[in-house]
Length: 485
Image (cartoon, rainbow, N blue to C red; front, top):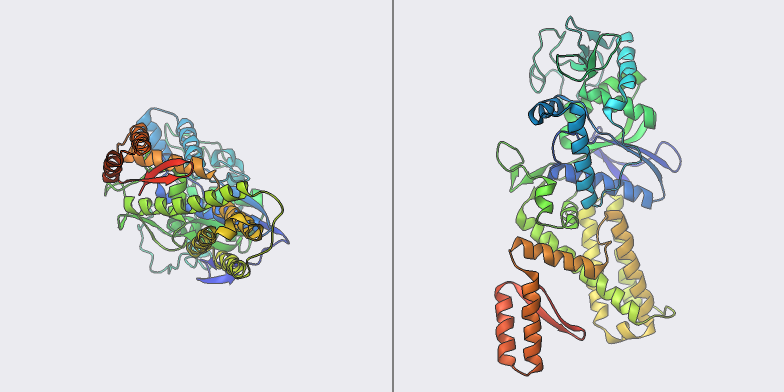
């Protein structure tokens, strides 16, 4: 497998530190608000990475944290009249609900910052002892950025070009304005913990170094997160960890790209801030997940309602084919037969290319292209009567369906029962267009009755009325079926 290492600015062959094992840490949410589409992308990307590593046979130990103490949480608690812990718990549970809708696997370990204060205190003490940190007159503790070599390497920044005050609060008590907080002295009314330096709370960057060291050991294989975390969070995390543990503590740094909304950077000030819940009110969670896989994870991704609609149509095509294969295999049970040689060769080529795409830095966009190659092959073969009804095509039908399921397990999509999922998509589409699905069912039934009575004029009139709503009726041996065109 080849993976892009942000630290080296290049793709590298993935060589794990322990035989058969991968240890991986991904930065989770700061629990002060509902998750947005940027969170969704990061979670989907690293969920697929974990799934694929396990598919390759690795035993993966996956850690994703929750930041449950932070300035933003404290501010939200004041706004909502709750304690900081109540706010964090509220939004952590909301996270689980949203990620459940996106079929995100839970991490093996999901530590919370407030449960690891002592580990952070010990790490701070070690940095003070080694001279990499200092205590200010206010009781805050800062890390000496210029003391560590290679600062800025991860995010591609030159330390001399970093402007004082840029993303770093000005503080006269600091030795250097680039220094960052390891420990913040308690303020009135804020949550705090005892420490050798007085009551206070940890800085944001400290928690990930402490928790990754506790659960994964140093060094570990993969550290992931959104591109926005590369600086300052991951840069600072890397600096303090190198200082504390005397060397690199992560082998591969992996970052996913930004999400833009209607070609603009997502921002509350621009009024284009889109939460996962906003999207789930109108679209099935699997549609959003599928959409997030359509671009390479490192590339920017443009979100729009039109893009979601296209993703929904594409996902429907896969489910229609999956359902058709399942239906044919239910009809023709028995011993698998011989192979269709040309179709078999095409299938094997698609399988190899799918694996190559995933091995090449988790190229899900390209992998989905081969999924549609398989869909086209399956539909072409299903149109051949001998393939559908005779034994020689049975083996290939089974293998194509197995491949769809296997690939779906890795990508986390097209795993639901086909007919039930397609029905859910119809209901969601009706909701978006303010159409009553029961009214459509009645119209389809009236058309069927008109056809039985040979009143084709009435039947055609109803079909036209449905077409004006964007609905197509398909007459099948099992009766009429309707869907959006």
